[in-house]
Amino acid sequence: MRGASAALAAVLALAAAQARAETYAGPLFDAHLHYNVEAVEHYSVATAFELFRKNGVAAILANSRPNDGSRALYEARRGNPAAGVEVVPFIRVYRNRADYGTWQDNREILAMIVEEEKRGYYKGVGEFHVHGRAADTPVLKDIVDFAVARGLVLHAHSDDVAIEILFRHNPKARVIWAHTGFSATPVSRVEEMLRKYPALWGELSYRSDVEDGGKLTAEWKAMFTKYPTRFMLGSDTWVNERWATYPSIMGGYRRWLGELPREVADRIAWGNAADLLGVTRIR
Image (cartoon, rainbow, N blue to C red; front, top):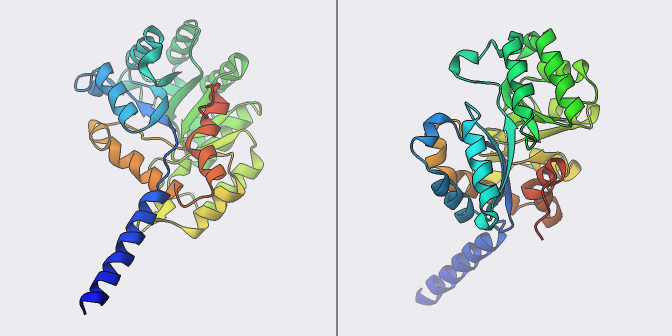
């Protein structure tokens, strides 16, 4: 019995070691990072950068309400290249919470975006929230046209109907689809959208159906393998609880990335966001 127990222990230890070995260890690009006013009050810029480094996050797509938070992160990185984390700032469309639900009809928001873009370092507009026919407004069309003219990427928290309207506003738009439509959008519809719009990328925060029981689902594994250049990761630190659980969020990505072929995992973890946003690839 003692020998059988020892053999079982050895098998379990080997299985645990293999599981640890399969965890993805490469650099991560957090393509959905908020540094909102509520976070600024509790997490200093230095603390934020330390958190990124500890979790192997080598680049972030930063946006905030208001835009002061994103600027603070960008300026800190520009002032200290040794910080070890690239910051790619996007222009958020919200000056305050009152702008939610009304921004797409508000020409003051368009004027703010135009003025903010003059700083010369923004790579995109968003994350913004718009759903269904609410995306079909003259102001939002002007914002999309402005983004295309300036080479800015859109980051849209939207359903598939609104995404279609964004591309109808300007077929040359480039769009990161926040949460890839959440789990309410069937995987088959996600694939249909990717086929229809070559300049659409899915960001995977809150896409809860990617895993089942801590394992990558067969459906999503097939999707990632078929479309390895079309997905990216994000933390979506929209509330401070997401900052507090940041290691768990990024660790969850590392777990299922380890189940993919290495070249596919590298694309989703880093390469797709880096290529789209012009960040030097980490080897």
